Length: 151
Image 1: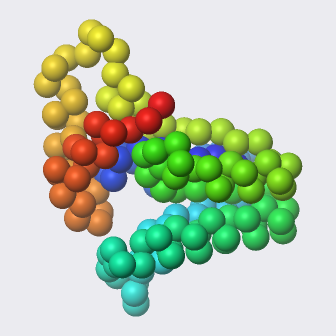
Image 2: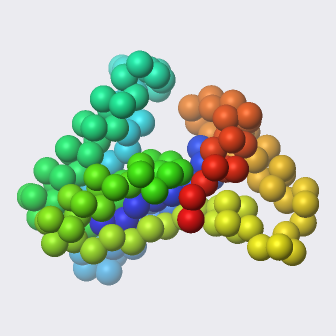
Image 3: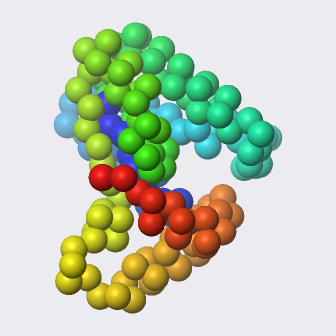
């Protein structure tokens, strides 16, 4: 199992697709990408439903578990996973199904910065993510998520 991590607009979904494609090109037989965002789709349009967010996260976790029980070789969880607790159920289920877990942090150099990072680099990164994210997540929310990201 691969757990994608990063703020909205960082490129998690793009990286998840790259990982899936590489897996299949290297001889893999099955892969699935599961995102809680999938549950916000209505007639092909993303409609964020805050009141259903917890329920949708649970549904995604159940879907991932079911895919692992079916023996899908590689299951990729494409969520922000900002806090360690966000990943606990996935990690626990992976262990019970005999899957190894790998975390892929997109934008790691900004979310886990070094002391010599350019002071403007973080703000530039947040601005870029705010412009790139496809779900209209406001810049201040992305900034807050980045500042509370747990290693």
